[in-house]
Length: 626
Ligand code: FAD
Image (cartoon, rainbow, N blue to C red; front, side):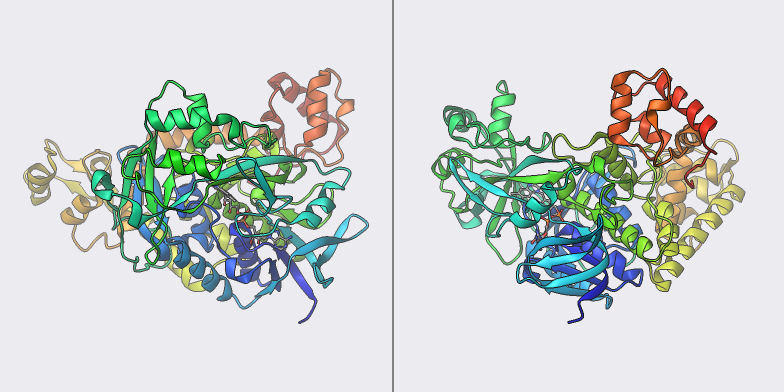
């Protein structure tokens, strides 16, 4: 094997695979080094992709040609549209994946890129030359060289697994932790680090569950897939089931809280607020006498079931006792005990908005190592880090989407500015411009850029260009088309849709009505709107036009100031009038733009005005490209 590459990606999880694929698609010779080639694309916890905010990220990854949406569609055994009755901005796709099909699809997609090479070895050290990364060294002492390295080591750095008072080192169940790499990074004088925690529930054998007692939740298949490019045949669809904890369950947990690793003081790091352990829920929400549990199959060829909602670090015997108090689980056989894992993360405030380290040249960090939780958050960062590692090697300007352009932009900006005091997960509520950032328009927002970066094939570009052209044409057609009272369209609308046309109505006014769907328009003007996705886009844009225009105006107003670049070596002590607290925060965060400075907690509008005065006075104004 040759030992020199353009880019080395460490880790074959959700961030690592996207990073390697993006860099490979951009034409760079890329090596993905990971503990085990068999676990590439492995899901450490719940085999589900998407959900509120997370589904938006997956659609954006698809718009940029990534792997996750393709694998999720090929492995989807249960599909749901969350918030289906609400507006399109918060509507989100969620699929339950067959764990094995998912992993195999990720590897297949990754290996379809001939620029990507795989290598199985733990990476123990980074090779540096004057604060610049030049490669990595593996456990066997093999030295591998590259112009850029992307670190995506997930929960493995100094990972410690807890079940009750039993602890052992591990990156996740059945895998060793990465100690040496962690010590290496910890020893860097400027890189800040901390400990975080996450957990997973016990798995249960379906044959031991009495599903006849439970509420069934069928799949909503067919529904909109994640991938914009290919239409995959979904595997067989299966049902999920719903059950609840009860007072007996809560009493067992409450009585044994002191034995939980979370409560005994064995775990230092905070866990994910929005995905708490069952003991956390019972402690924090003591007034609630039940909590919902979704029983989700792990795959088509396994009987293992994931009980979503009861992640725990209680001792195994207590897990067994409390699980057996739950309806349908009275005879549950546990196939794997639940556990908590504590791991090192490295402060994302030490990264640029394109995920490069501020302290070591040519190294990028992506995924759970940055304090996030979730496959989708990891994959989105991996994509961005892979793109930027490639751009760096190509000597091209770095790229990252802004907050009003993509959830990926919101994610990295939040991480950059606020760090991760607890595991960070994405929600639609984190995006102030969420009307602009819908699942349905992710390709309209990002695909052109993805093509320019070299992430897409010419076939994908043609496909997107046709859709884009159709959107323009359909908009014009609907502006021109008039429906008159009494004509066949108005009769159809009256009889089938419940809309009475009283005066001549333009098509683009009609589509603003809430009752109007793509089917109605395709029926009125058959053969005109063949491309349903393009038509859907035209309808959504028309229905929410008022809000969208207002949000765009807000973005424009703010963006001029917030895009102002703060020079890398800007001396904040020159700015007279800043409080010590603000000064300290700015020096510590070293924001890249005024927009980022604005979002640092405690940095007041007055401080921003002072900063603008000094930047204007002392340096020529530079703005990041919009
Ligand atoms: P990972 O998927 O962890 O991949 C890391 C990769 O790096 C692995 O392939 C590993 O082998 C490799 N690696 C690590 N160190 C080295 C090294 N030194 N040399 C070579 N290879 C290396 N997310 C949720 O959204 N909800 C949950 O409820 C949830 N629960 C979780 C429970 C547990 C127990 C765990 C472990 C994770 C949980 N997660 C949960 C998180 C989810 O699994 C991660 O967010 C996601 O997998 C992170 O992706 P990643 O690519 O950053 O890292």
